[in-house]
Picture 1: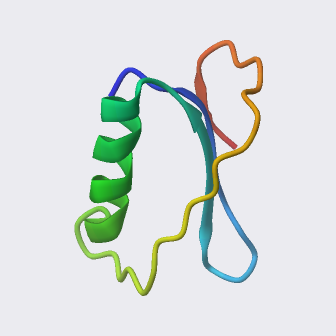
Picture 2: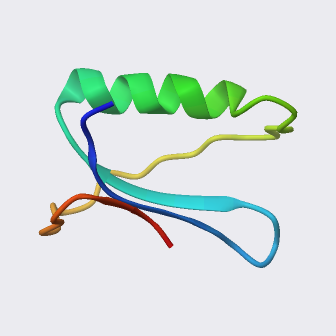
Picture 3: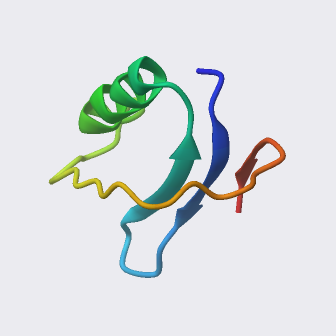
Length: 61
């Protein structure tokens, strides 16, 4: 998607993402998260706008 930031699985089974990109890229990410990968169960998606961080790329932590 051309984003920078990171994604990480949380101990409670949720997924935490911090991402930086254009408005369209971030909207695309949110829409993808509402479906999730094949065989995933998505109960809810919430997002919060925060001050931009300095990321070098996109990492899976």
